[in-house]
Image (cartoon, rainbow, N blue to C red):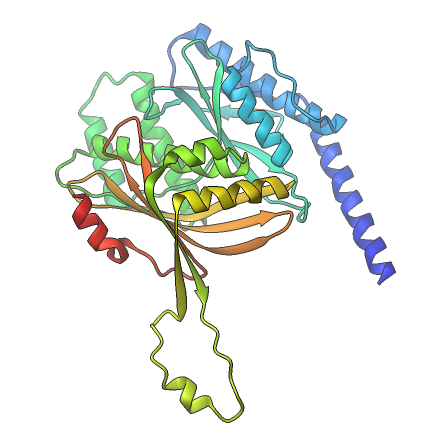
Length: 373
């Protein structure tokens, strides 16, 4: 047992040294934005500020620093606070010395660059796979927000509709053109292994309107995920409706006695074989505060993101595969979020339902949706 412990300790140390050497090798990071913004001065500031952030992340890893040093000109106070929280939860560094990217406009009107490759250190998984970050910028070129990317794939017919609409606009500016190019890039990346899809086909909307809504949902889910990684309890508390329902499923267990197989088979158990426990927002937030306090390390990852829309209404069902990795607890399962986007500036989660298997969908909450409409 002692030999195994020594071996594991040596392995972790070797991986840690490898990470530090990799960060040191790529300590200086250069970001170049190819298209998406016409203002050359603003573009230059965005490139400089993002390059500085990523370079400073690498420097902090090399020095095993407690925080990342950033000048106030590089990032807003809110963004710096988020970067510090993310750094405290799971230190990260950029794995590339040069980033060539495009600029897009978020649903809130901020400028954004996406898919910046980073690696996160995990307390129980030193050999973590790479993640992708997005950086938002205000009109002064400061970094205003940081989020961990997710990928949502659009159906091919939706991409085709976007292409046709774009062809009718002969004088598109760089940002509009970049929206289309970024979409194509995301589609190509997703089809190479990301099992994600979006189904927000609404005949009452034009393709560009649907595209804008898809961007809103993607930005929201990325911020939602990042809030958990940053342990931002205030954001999480505000994003859930006061009347939100928190549902979790636990496998039903039956105490078996020898020679009782037929009796067990005859029991009237629901088709999923789970007990569903319902809690309130207040209880959920109270418990989550304790989870954040007792876990030095936390990394929440979203995969296989699928989005459905209630036609004619701004109500979305988001299904995703969640991997929860923390100091004291780890699990994997399917998370379902029912999101109300009626208010442009206040998207809220009304239902959060988790189960080890994929058992929830829009059909699961049809009664609630009917009342909401």
